[in-house]
Image 1 (cartoon, rainbow, N blue to C red):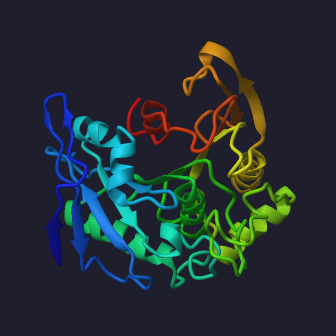
Image 2 (tube, helix red, strand yellow):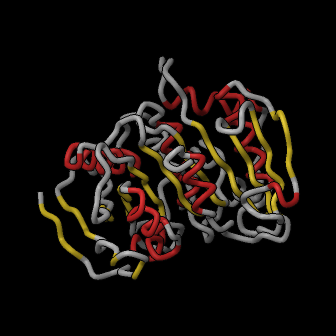
Image 3 (cartoon, rainbow, N blue to C red):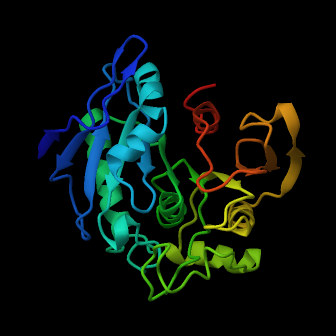
Length: 296
Protein backbone atom coordinates (compact mmCIF):
# COMPACT_ATOMS: atom_id res chain seq x y z
CA UNK A 1 0.00 0.00 0.00
CA UNK A 2 1.29 3.44 -0.89
CA UNK A 3 0.49 6.83 0.63
CA UNK A 4 1.00 9.94 -1.48
CA UNK A 5 1.22 13.19 0.46
CA UNK A 6 -0.63 16.14 -0.98
CA UNK A 7 -0.14 19.78 -0.06
CA UNK A 8 -3.81 20.44 -0.74
CA UNK A 9 -5.98 21.68 2.10
CA UNK A 10 -3.26 22.71 4.56
CA UNK A 11 -4.36 25.25 7.14
CA UNK A 12 -3.24 26.57 10.48
CA UNK A 13 -4.87 25.85 13.83
CA UNK A 14 -4.30 26.69 17.47
CA UNK A 15 -1.40 24.67 18.80
CA UNK A 16 0.12 23.62 15.49
CA UNK A 17 -0.38 22.86 11.84
CA UNK A 18 -2.89 20.34 10.59
CA UNK A 19 -1.51 17.20 9.03
CA UNK A 20 -1.52 17.28 5.25
CA UNK A 21 -4.36 15.73 3.35
CA UNK A 22 -2.88 12.52 1.97
CA UNK A 23 -3.92 10.34 -0.92
CA UNK A 24 -3.95 6.62 -0.22
CA UNK A 25 -3.73 4.00 -2.98
CA UNK A 26 -4.09 0.24 -2.76
CA UNK A 27 -6.61 0.48 0.08
CA UNK A 28 -8.67 -2.53 -1.01
CA UNK A 29 -11.60 -3.48 -3.22
CA UNK A 30 -12.61 -0.47 -5.31
CA UNK A 31 -14.98 -1.46 -8.12
CA UNK A 32 -15.68 2.07 -9.38
CA UNK A 33 -12.17 3.51 -9.11
CA UNK A 34 -12.90 6.25 -6.59
CA UNK A 35 -10.01 7.94 -4.76
CA UNK A 36 -9.15 7.92 -1.05
CA UNK A 37 -7.74 10.85 0.88
CA UNK A 38 -7.11 10.87 4.60
CA UNK A 39 -6.39 13.43 7.30
CA UNK A 40 -4.60 12.08 10.38
CA UNK A 41 -4.03 14.38 13.37
CA UNK A 42 -0.61 14.88 14.90
CA UNK A 43 -1.76 13.02 18.01
CA UNK A 44 -4.12 10.16 17.15
CA UNK A 45 -6.39 9.04 19.97
CA UNK A 46 -6.09 5.49 21.27
CA UNK A 47 -8.57 3.51 19.15
CA UNK A 48 -9.65 6.64 17.27
CA UNK A 49 -13.08 7.40 15.91
CA UNK A 50 -13.33 7.74 12.13
CA UNK A 51 -15.48 10.17 10.16
CA UNK A 52 -16.07 9.68 6.42
CA UNK A 53 -16.67 13.12 4.87
CA UNK A 54 -18.32 13.10 1.43
CA UNK A 55 -18.04 16.03 -0.97
CA UNK A 56 -20.96 17.45 -3.00
CA UNK A 57 -21.43 17.30 -6.76
CA UNK A 58 -18.63 19.02 -8.60
CA UNK A 59 -16.50 18.93 -5.48
CA UNK A 60 -13.23 17.32 -4.50
CA UNK A 61 -11.74 15.82 -1.37
CA UNK A 62 -9.54 18.88 -0.83
CA UNK A 63 -12.43 21.31 -1.25
CA UNK A 64 -14.58 19.46 1.28
CA UNK A 65 -11.58 19.23 3.61
CA UNK A 66 -11.39 23.03 3.51
CA UNK A 67 -15.17 23.54 3.67
CA UNK A 68 -15.59 22.61 7.34
CA UNK A 69 -13.61 22.95 10.56
CA UNK A 70 -13.54 19.19 11.10
CA UNK A 71 -9.76 18.98 10.49
CA UNK A 72 -9.18 21.42 13.35
CA UNK A 73 -11.47 19.43 15.64
CA UNK A 74 -9.63 16.29 14.56
CA UNK A 75 -6.39 17.82 15.85
CA UNK A 76 -7.88 18.56 19.26
CA UNK A 77 -9.87 15.33 19.62
CA UNK A 78 -7.69 12.76 17.86
CA UNK A 79 -10.20 11.33 15.39
CA UNK A 80 -9.33 10.49 11.77
CA UNK A 81 -11.05 11.91 8.69
CA UNK A 82 -11.49 10.01 5.42
CA UNK A 83 -12.27 12.05 2.31
CA UNK A 84 -13.39 9.85 -0.59
CA UNK A 85 -13.44 11.44 -4.03
CA UNK A 86 -15.27 10.59 -7.22
CA UNK A 87 -14.70 12.10 -10.65
CA UNK A 88 -17.59 10.36 -12.45
CA UNK A 89 -21.06 11.81 -13.03
CA UNK A 90 -19.71 15.39 -12.77
CA UNK A 91 -18.10 14.32 -9.49
CA UNK A 92 -21.44 13.18 -8.02
CA UNK A 93 -21.89 9.91 -6.09
CA UNK A 94 -23.69 6.89 -7.58
CA UNK A 95 -26.76 7.16 -5.33
CA UNK A 96 -29.04 5.67 -8.00
CA UNK A 97 -27.18 2.44 -8.76
CA UNK A 98 -28.05 -0.93 -7.24
CA UNK A 99 -24.33 -1.53 -6.67
CA UNK A 100 -24.28 1.13 -3.95
CA UNK A 101 -27.84 0.56 -2.73
CA UNK A 102 -27.03 -3.06 -1.86
CA UNK A 103 -24.86 -4.37 0.97
CA UNK A 104 -21.75 -5.88 -0.62
CA UNK A 105 -22.65 -4.47 -4.05
CA UNK A 106 -20.17 -3.20 -6.63
CA UNK A 107 -20.74 0.57 -6.42
CA UNK A 108 -19.00 3.56 -4.88
CA UNK A 109 -20.24 2.44 -1.46
CA UNK A 110 -18.05 -0.67 -1.44
CA UNK A 111 -14.93 1.38 -2.21
CA UNK A 112 -15.77 3.65 0.73
CA UNK A 113 -16.14 0.61 3.00
CA UNK A 114 -12.68 -0.52 1.88
CA UNK A 115 -11.34 2.88 2.93
CA UNK A 116 -12.94 2.47 6.36
CA UNK A 117 -11.51 -1.01 6.82
CA UNK A 118 -8.04 0.15 5.72
CA UNK A 119 -8.14 2.97 8.28
CA UNK A 120 -9.49 0.79 11.08
CA UNK A 121 -6.67 -1.69 10.52
CA UNK A 122 -3.83 0.79 10.02
CA UNK A 123 -4.66 3.04 12.96
CA UNK A 124 -6.34 0.52 15.28
CA UNK A 125 -9.61 2.42 15.00
CA UNK A 126 -12.70 1.85 17.10
CA UNK A 127 -15.20 -0.11 15.01
CA UNK A 128 -18.04 1.19 17.17
CA UNK A 129 -17.15 4.79 16.33
CA UNK A 130 -17.32 5.01 12.54
CA UNK A 131 -19.43 7.86 11.17
CA UNK A 132 -20.34 9.45 7.84
CA UNK A 133 -21.37 12.96 6.84
CA UNK A 134 -21.74 14.88 3.59
CA UNK A 135 -23.26 17.76 1.70
CA UNK A 136 -25.71 17.61 -1.21
CA UNK A 137 -24.65 14.56 -3.28
CA UNK A 138 -22.43 13.68 -0.31
CA UNK A 139 -25.48 13.93 1.96
CA UNK A 140 -27.38 11.63 -0.38
CA UNK A 141 -24.44 9.22 -0.21
CA UNK A 142 -24.41 9.46 3.59
CA UNK A 143 -27.96 8.11 3.51
CA UNK A 144 -26.77 5.37 1.17
CA UNK A 145 -23.88 4.37 3.44
CA UNK A 146 -25.94 4.01 6.62
CA UNK A 147 -28.69 2.22 4.68
CA UNK A 148 -26.47 -0.27 2.88
CA UNK A 149 -23.93 -0.73 5.70
CA UNK A 150 -25.72 -0.41 9.06
CA UNK A 151 -23.18 -2.87 10.47
CA UNK A 152 -20.32 -0.42 9.80
CA UNK A 153 -21.63 3.02 10.83
CA UNK A 154 -22.74 4.18 14.26
CA UNK A 155 -24.36 7.36 12.92
CA UNK A 156 -24.61 9.59 9.88
CA UNK A 157 -25.45 13.18 8.99
CA UNK A 158 -26.90 14.63 5.79
CA UNK A 159 -26.66 18.32 4.90
CA UNK A 160 -29.19 18.93 2.10
CA UNK A 161 -29.65 15.32 1.00
CA UNK A 162 -32.39 12.88 0.05
CA UNK A 163 -33.71 9.64 1.51
CA UNK A 164 -32.04 6.29 0.94
CA UNK A 165 -33.26 4.81 -2.35
CA UNK A 166 -34.87 8.05 -3.52
CA UNK A 167 -32.92 7.89 -6.80
CA UNK A 168 -33.08 4.11 -7.10
CA UNK A 169 -33.41 2.85 -10.64
CA UNK A 170 -33.06 6.24 -12.30
CA UNK A 171 -31.36 5.92 -15.69
CA UNK A 172 -30.36 9.57 -15.59
CA UNK A 173 -26.97 10.51 -14.19
CA UNK A 174 -27.31 11.51 -10.50
CA UNK A 175 -26.38 15.16 -11.11
CA UNK A 176 -28.22 18.50 -10.99
CA UNK A 177 -28.08 18.39 -14.79
CA UNK A 178 -29.62 14.92 -15.18
CA UNK A 179 -32.94 14.52 -16.94
CA UNK A 180 -34.60 12.95 -13.89
CA UNK A 181 -34.94 15.47 -11.05
CA UNK A 182 -37.99 13.81 -9.46
CA UNK A 183 -36.13 12.89 -6.30
CA UNK A 184 -34.48 16.26 -5.67
CA UNK A 185 -37.79 18.04 -6.27
CA UNK A 186 -39.33 16.26 -3.27
CA UNK A 187 -40.41 12.71 -4.14
CA UNK A 188 -42.73 11.37 -1.44
CA UNK A 189 -43.44 7.86 -0.15
CA UNK A 190 -45.08 6.47 2.95
CA UNK A 191 -42.83 5.73 5.90
CA UNK A 192 -43.38 2.01 5.33
CA UNK A 193 -42.35 2.25 1.68
CA UNK A 194 -39.25 4.29 2.51
CA UNK A 195 -38.29 1.75 5.15
CA UNK A 196 -38.59 -1.09 2.63
CA UNK A 197 -35.84 0.49 0.53
CA UNK A 198 -33.55 0.26 3.56
CA UNK A 199 -34.56 -3.26 4.55
CA UNK A 200 -34.12 -4.54 1.00
CA UNK A 201 -30.56 -3.17 0.88
CA UNK A 202 -29.44 -5.75 3.43
CA UNK A 203 -32.00 -8.57 3.62
CA UNK A 204 -32.03 -10.46 6.88
CA UNK A 205 -30.08 -7.84 8.82
CA UNK A 206 -31.41 -7.59 12.39
CA UNK A 207 -28.62 -5.62 14.09
CA UNK A 208 -28.47 -2.09 15.38
CA UNK A 209 -29.34 0.74 12.99
CA UNK A 210 -27.26 3.93 12.76
CA UNK A 211 -28.52 7.14 14.34
CA UNK A 212 -29.06 10.01 11.92
CA UNK A 213 -29.00 13.81 11.67
CA UNK A 214 -30.76 15.71 8.88
CA UNK A 215 -30.03 19.41 8.21
CA UNK A 216 -31.79 21.24 5.40
CA UNK A 217 -32.73 24.77 4.35
CA UNK A 218 -36.26 25.89 3.59
CA UNK A 219 -34.82 28.20 0.90
CA UNK A 220 -33.15 25.29 -0.94
CA UNK A 221 -34.40 25.26 -4.53
CA UNK A 222 -31.96 22.60 -5.78
CA UNK A 223 -32.80 19.83 -3.31
CA UNK A 224 -36.24 20.82 -2.09
CA UNK A 225 -37.06 21.02 1.64
CA UNK A 226 -39.55 18.15 1.31
CA UNK A 227 -36.52 15.89 0.88
CA UNK A 228 -35.60 16.56 4.52
CA UNK A 229 -39.01 15.51 5.78
CA UNK A 230 -38.88 12.36 3.65
CA UNK A 231 -35.52 11.42 5.22
CA UNK A 232 -36.95 11.94 8.69
CA UNK A 233 -39.99 9.89 7.74
CA UNK A 234 -37.76 7.06 6.51
CA UNK A 235 -35.33 6.90 9.42
CA UNK A 236 -38.02 7.37 12.07
CA UNK A 237 -39.67 4.21 10.75
CA UNK A 238 -36.39 2.27 10.50
CA UNK A 239 -35.27 3.36 13.97
CA UNK A 240 -38.73 2.89 15.48
CA UNK A 241 -38.97 6.42 16.89
CA UNK A 242 -41.52 9.23 16.68
CA UNK A 243 -41.29 13.02 16.69
CA UNK A 244 -41.37 13.73 20.43
CA UNK A 245 -40.47 17.43 20.52
CA UNK A 246 -39.68 20.48 18.40
CA UNK A 247 -37.51 23.41 19.51
CA UNK A 248 -37.09 26.91 18.12
CA UNK A 249 -35.16 30.04 19.05
CA UNK A 250 -32.05 30.45 21.13
CA UNK A 251 -32.20 26.91 22.50
CA UNK A 252 -31.41 25.39 19.10
CA UNK A 253 -27.67 24.70 18.92
CA UNK A 254 -27.64 24.60 15.11
CA UNK A 255 -28.71 28.25 15.09
CA UNK A 256 -31.75 30.45 15.67
CA UNK A 257 -32.82 30.09 12.03
CA UNK A 258 -33.47 26.39 12.62
CA UNK A 259 -36.32 24.36 14.01
CA UNK A 260 -34.96 21.29 15.78
CA UNK A 261 -37.11 18.18 15.35
CA UNK A 262 -36.33 15.49 17.92
CA UNK A 263 -37.31 11.86 17.41
CA UNK A 264 -37.14 9.43 20.31
CA UNK A 265 -34.44 10.72 22.63
CA UNK A 266 -32.30 13.63 21.46
CA UNK A 267 -29.51 11.38 20.20
CA UNK A 268 -31.39 8.93 17.95
CA UNK A 269 -32.79 11.01 15.09
CA UNK A 270 -32.83 14.77 14.77
CA UNK A 271 -33.78 17.21 12.05
CA UNK A 272 -32.66 20.82 11.70
CA UNK A 273 -34.86 22.76 9.27
CA UNK A 274 -33.53 26.26 8.54
CA UNK A 275 -35.59 29.32 7.67
CA UNK A 276 -33.82 31.30 4.93
CA UNK A 277 -31.12 28.64 4.58
CA UNK A 278 -30.28 27.64 1.01
CA UNK A 279 -28.19 24.88 -0.54
CA UNK A 280 -26.02 23.46 1.19
CA UNK A 281 -27.08 23.76 4.86
CA UNK A 282 -23.73 24.49 6.53
CA UNK A 283 -22.40 21.88 8.97
CA UNK A 284 -22.15 23.15 12.55
CA UNK A 285 -19.23 21.09 13.78
CA UNK A 286 -19.86 21.19 17.56
CA UNK A 287 -23.44 19.99 17.02
CA UNK A 288 -22.31 17.27 14.63
CA UNK A 289 -19.54 15.99 16.91
CA UNK A 290 -21.85 16.01 19.93
CA UNK A 291 -24.43 14.00 17.97
CA UNK A 292 -21.70 11.54 16.98
CA UNK A 293 -20.77 11.37 20.70
CA UNK A 294 -17.15 12.25 19.85
CA UNK A 295 -17.42 15.31 22.08
CA UNK A 296 -19.78 16.07 24.95
